[in-house]
Image: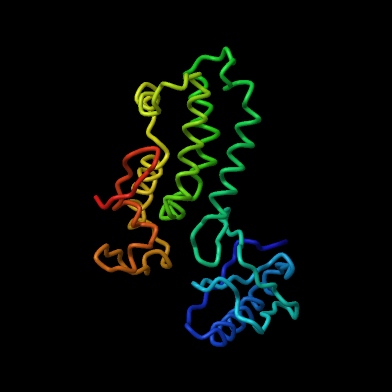
Length: 243
């Protein structure tokens, strides 16, 4: 058995303290893994340090699990999300964009401009297959910069224009209105709103113990819930203004 969904997090301004705490928690985790006979591949594990600095400090002490060193990385995949050191989600959004293009290529014969499939069926394929790929984890990466989110918004425009075989002079707003589909950014905002409204009813202690979100606190502006306080206008430039 392999466990690939376990995260050990330590927070401190001193790197030596962080590594010491990580090693302590991993030693406790090793006891649990031995009891449940779970095998961990250290080479497939990763240590990621979230910091503003562009490079890792030189001479970091390696963290070990079962005596094997765990490599330090700048990007790690966890529960389907690519987490980078600065939490800009630039790498994750680029990978999501490539994955959506690959899924679209598999359905190209059905939803292309020359396809004789009814538009309502093309839209159904987009809503049920392509859009979920692009929106997975949007409750988290939705707080990324507009320069990154605009890539997914532009890709959505391209997909829908192919579905309806729209000529160049038809505006994207007209296509969204006729198909009764929200643009990408307002759509992930709605997904996030439903997600965060359900959180108070979740019995998980780790979630219930999270500090309350206060938009008046400057540090809260970078939290995922801050997506709900933004209003996306002026497409395709997708400028972000405070509501």
